Image (cartoon, rainbow, N blue to C red; front, side, top):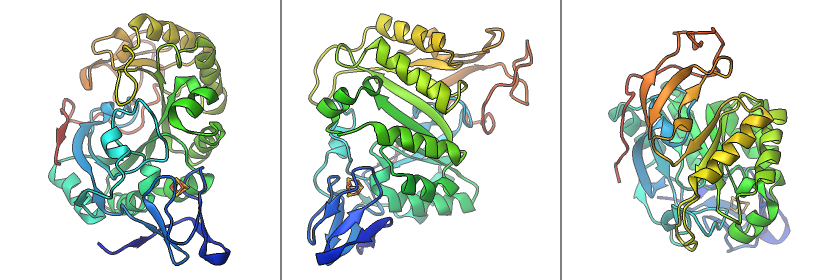
Length: 350
Ligand code: SF4
């Protein structure tokens, strides 16, 4: 496939370029690549090297993203290209996110949309690696997908610039923004090679201003990233800046890649859950602990069980047609509708 010129970059003197897609804002010399290794300056123009090259494609239930309050039960065509702008030492997709070569299958936007149709999915998820670093591929696919009525979702580390959020927002319906270690700047610096967490909060505010549905996750890592104070601060920020009805998922860490410590104790997650509830967040979930009662949705008004889940499947639906609690009538913020595919299980195309 021919090189694809990048979006959102600036040409500088001496054939240098400045990339404005993610918050690293790399300045790249002629012939060089950015921190993500997938954007190259050739003769003063910036090119996306991974455009249309999917390293992974699979059908997932939307709950796997996780998105619990957006088109529940939907099947999502999930695509990824190689590369990342983080270097997380615990990444569970490190084989593709930290891949140094441009590998993948020829899977241009039209093919992604066709596969979405052929597999009876309701939308597309740009996921597994960081969608910001395959921005042009995600952008073109999103535009096409929207034309035929599919929704688009990002699973992102949130390290986007306001410019990239504004560019994708007209086609982006929902985003799962993943924090790690309670957004502790030191944790990000040591474990992910990220110099500042501030851009993530700015990107979230921009997503909110653009009316993109947002769900937040926070990976609770034993000892180095399980501070309840940090989790409290993050929950307060979410309440104040995004809204108390923002779904907030506390995810269990499992050892992977370079980090071999044991998984997060369930009691630690339950303490974090209580902290987020005390702060006033209305929809707090515990993730990666199948069959835990906190993977269900309860009414914040009367505590009625509204949606029962097991792993990624909805096993009981107890909301009215207009998304209200059947007992107290409270309006439950769920965008879209319950999808008949309901109990789909993940399967890979490649
Ligand atoms: S997308 Fe890549 S090249 Fe652009 S700023 Fe981020 S890390 Fe640098």
